[in-house]
Structure formats: structure tokens, C-alpha cells
Amino acid sequence: MNKAYPIPATRIVRHQPGAAQQLGADIAILGAGIAGVSAALEAARLGRRVILIDAGAQLGGQSTQSLIGTFCGLYSNGPAPYRVVYGMADAMLRDLRAMDAVAPRRGRNTVILMYQEQALARWMEQALIAAGVTLLLGSSLLAVHRSDARVTGLSLASRHGLLDVTAQGFVDASGDAALAYAAGFACREPESPIMGTLMFSIENFDEAAAMALDRWAMQRRLAEQAAHYGLVRKDGFVFAFPGKGQALVNMTHVQTPLDAAGHALAQIEGRAQADRVLAFLRGEYPLVFGAARVRSYGLLGIRQTRWICGRQQLDVADVRAGTRPADAVLRCSWPIELHDRADDVHWEEFGDDHLHYLPFGAMLPQEAENLVAAGRCVDGDPAALSSVRVMGPCIAMGAAAAQALDLAGAGSVAQIDIAALQARLADNLERCEPA
Image (cartoon, rainbow, N blue to C red; front, side):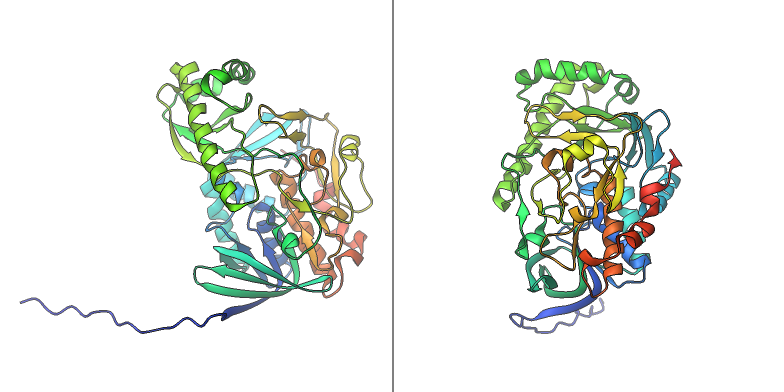
């Protein structure tokens, strides 16, 4: 005779329209990409209560979900590169090396680090939880509340209900200047589109043969055969992570609109381009990629869509000249990498001793007192911005944003002591640890 199995109990509930969960912090950060995670860890290290918000279901933004696969802008140029970005990068690189999840390669006159996305995502989870950061994932921005020049709160929507977040200071690390834009602060958009890339990973190929391919010869063949395979972009590359049986492919260009329907179509177009790129690899290099297949498609990678109107703007002339402004908060050696054409990329590389700098004013929306931008939505002309929106400088921007808000307290970030801020950021301005 079977025993009666107890049926789980239930209860009846009713939604109360307009009721929102109330959350408070010292610093609230919108965007959990590499800049936002850096800002959160830096603010938590300073003893601040931190809330980190992202519409995605996973931490890391493009660094973990768009299959970028490379840390760019962490090192200087030349035959003996040294690291120019510290803070969060110290523990991150140490732990990824211990997991055999990062590998160096030379390129663009510097050191580029290849990494495994899921290892990075797991590291971010563990680091943020250990730091006591409150995570609000799957939470989309509905509205920004202001009192004159100060942001006072954010209204969010999640599958679990509405949330209201209040804080003393805010970081816009959304990538699209979503917080600044929703608050009504002036923002910039490019009049002609800056192309995004849908990265994808492949497997079941000859890894040794792939790593031995002449990259420039592949680019010439890509340019010659692009029309035959229906390809949009006529440059790009394949890079294999040593010993893992996987490679990432960077050979697509897709416009990245700011409307929801357009973005969905762009994602689908990116996958269609990826399929055509795989056909090119199979057809032109059958001994290497003849049996290759897509392992995973990344989310559409976005380079530049909308950014703040800052109290200062990074200018391409200053990037080329390596001008160090009086309020510099980080240094960078990454080339101008402007994706303003569908068929190729404008690269402008720099010499061995070149460094350029981001002024703190480029992180401050003109009309805001307690909001700092970090990541690819700081202010620069399109060419200048293309040289500082990679992950190394974005990590440094996150640290600068957290330190600035800590110094400002209840005051204005536009009135803090710049010398005091630079003293806190000395590693990212002066330290030179060999690669």
C-alpha cells in the first residue's frame, strides 16, 4: 500500500500596484560590466555600502557575454611592456592565472591577455559577494529621480517586482549613458554609426595549424573573397586559446541602434554574418577549419552608442600628442581603433614610449554633482574615445569613479581636491610592473 505523499502548501497573494522594494546605499552603480564591477569593488574596499545594478542576468556585461576574450589596454607599448592598470586587475589577473584561464600574446606593439569568459564571470561573482556588494541583476532602469543637479534615486523593474534605490552618489557604467540620459543630462550620439561586432567561438578545428596561420595573409584573402561569401567586413582575425580547443572569431560588423527592436534585429544579423564567416573559414582553409563548428555566439558587442557631455572632452589631438592634463586619472597606450566603416577598421598605433591620459572632467556630466561616468560612455570625440573604451582603461575608470565619490561625500564631485584624487590613483598613473 502506497503512503499518501504530502502536497506542498500554497497561499493566495495579490499584487499591490505601485509597491516597490526600497533599497539604500552610499554608492549605486548602473552597469555591471568591467567598469561597473571595478567601481563596486573599489567602493566596497573604501567601506562604502554599494549596490550594483544590471539589466542582464550575469555579471560582466560584454566582458563575459559578448565573448570578447581579450584584455586590451592593460600594458604599455614597446619591447618590454609594463602594466599601466592596477586595483581590481591585481587580484583578477592573479586568480585567473591560478585557474589557467589567461594567456598572453603579443599584438599592436603591446601585450594582450586572452582569457576565458566563464572563469572571469565566476571570479566577479565571488569577488563581489566577498566584498559585501548588493547585486541587482535582471533589473532594468525605469526612471531617474533628481533634485536639481543631484541624482537622488533610481526606479527599477525586475521579474520580481519594482525597486527604488537611493544613494548619496551614482556611477553610470551602463555603456550607453543610460543613467545620465534618463536623468535628462545632455549626452552625445554619433551622427554616423560606430560598428559593433558579434564575436563567436568555434571548436573542432586544428588548433596548432590555426595558431600557425599568417594573420595578414588571412586578412588579404578575406578582402579578396568577402563578396563571394557575402561578408560585410573585410578584415579581422581568429585567435585560439592555447590548449583549450577553442578559438574566437572577430570578423563581423553590425550597426548597433539604441532602440529595442533594432537591437534585436542587429543581434540576428550578427549571427547571420558569423555563419557566413564560418563558411569562409571552412571554404578557404579546409585543412584547418574544414570540420569547424560554432560553439557559441556572443551577444552583440557594442563599441560606442551614446555618451555623456562632460565638463571636459578627450580630444584626439591630445591622444596623439600624449598630453597629460592637470586632472589626469589614468593612462593608456591602446591605439585609435575606430570602427566607423562597415568593411574595415581604422587603426592608428603608437610608438614604444607613448601614453595618453583621460581627464577627470571627461567622466563628469556637465550638469551633475553626484554622478560620475565610467567605461565607454565618458566624453571624448569618436576617435579619442575609441582609444580608451577597452577593458584596461575601463577598470581604471571604475576605480577613479569610486574614489571620487568617496572624496565628495555629500558634496559635489566637481569640487573635490584633484591632487587628493590623483594620490589615491597613483598606481594607475605611475606604477610600472613588468608584464
